Length: 189
Image 1 (cartoon, rainbow, N blue to C red):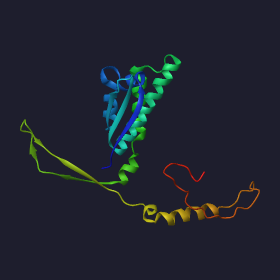
Image 2: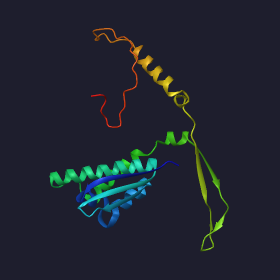
Image 3: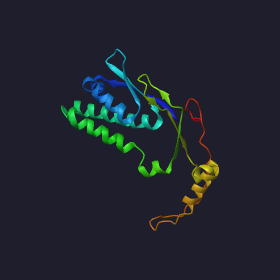
């Protein structure tokens, strides 16, 4: 699976407190709901870094939720109040994480196969199974077309669209090359 780690730097102390929650309740909720590992690291200067790691989609969902919590903390600080921590923030985070999950239709379109490993015994003598999930993703027709050809087709499709009656002049198709690149960012200035 696609693993990812991101760092959200310079999180103010009051925002980090909201991310952690009372007795760690909010950070536990973030971890449980998103499936990502979320860690708040104290830098020693009153600010903190938030590290989020795990599967790419889990990291994405947790990152959105953390950014929303930071925004809420800033809004609360500037407004002198805001959403109560008890129910409002938790339900907001739960809704954000739920809306970030793939739809059922998308999930059903993916083909998942589960292969069970040998049955092993746990310490209590109970059988425990290990499962491995592999996802077969089919290429979409767009992915099978070379990128350069897809770009040409896109440009041709845009140029060949009918002109609006509000357009004052005809547009000539123009071939556009790649932009110049420079490691310093000075494009020949």
